[in-house]
Image (cartoon, rainbow over all chains, first blue to last red; front, side, top):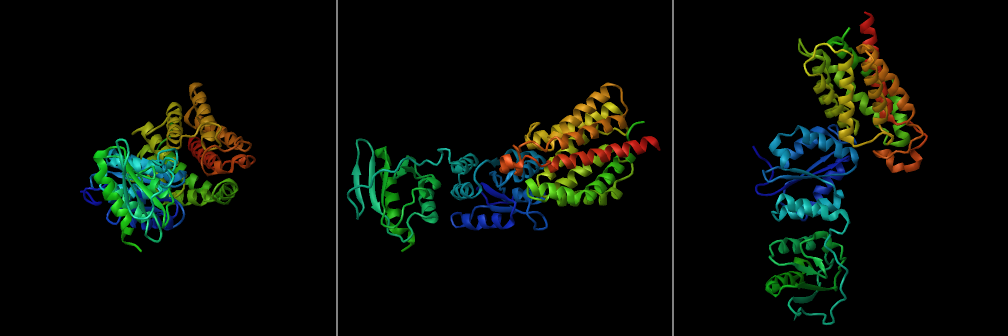
Length: 242
Length: 215
């Protein structure tokens, strides 16, 4: 019998602190309202530590048959999780991945991927993109385009790009960045936002773009122009914020 | 004389007593270089195991006792010691299987499996200032004793002696694993609490064997 959320990879956040695990679920929930996010923080009786039983139960609760990604904080959380994996039934163990990534950043990135319905390996990759070893998809920022203000279109030798100005108050903070990633997850072509891969939540967020910033949305493949237009429209819309 | 179910139960009871007696000492050691919960966690875990001993079904083997210790520690010890010791007892249980009486080589095999379980779970190596630094000399001494024809109680005693020396020898080491590794050079000058609790547990097993052999 499966629990979790049908069709989506589940996530388990293991922390020594129940408040950290629960707080991370709350944070990630902003960008992943429906994915299965299970906290496993603290010991059975609410002390600081990790619990074999809580971790085991959380993995079962997060699984819908599409797999589970587990992120941990300090060392013994990993030991507890590995022990829990040893005791899972073979099928569930085979589709559960313990990922070595920063708990908060990796957890949020993985949550967005899980929400988008990504495969188990793609959710693992999203979590690992938070490791800061060059996997974030961020490249060096490009200078802002000259033609600010209204959305403008341009074509390179073979690519296509548009520059828009962010109008919402807080710029590309977590929720709008997640909106971009969710839309980009449906694209067939590689699209970048100021050089960062539009499918990389952390890449987008680490651009640190605020209200009034100019954003160049581009693809090297002219066939992706419709996708660039869609993303430009989303960015110019203010993401429903003011 | 081989070690039987009576010994195994006595080992657990003595372990619980020893850990309780040294609870404050373990807390102090762990507070110096860790998070201070080792004595508390180990005491809670072994009290929980001791409470379950009376429920062991008739005909239980030493391996059944070790498995009970493993599953209880995994569920009740909140720190790294739970999975580490839990894995150790689980592997030890597997090594002796359904044997009802353990001779010298069987005891050595039990200890080797326990040490290997800890190493596979924690990935620590000798010299990292962890419980492995008590277990490695203990296993070496046990194998040497068993190879020389020592009986089960003598093998266990050799392991306990070597574990105690190994725990003391962790004092000058700089931690490379676990919470103490965050302290770097500052971890030197303190005994590793996991190595110390390992020595206590092996001494409890040796004492149980010595008393059983003399009875």
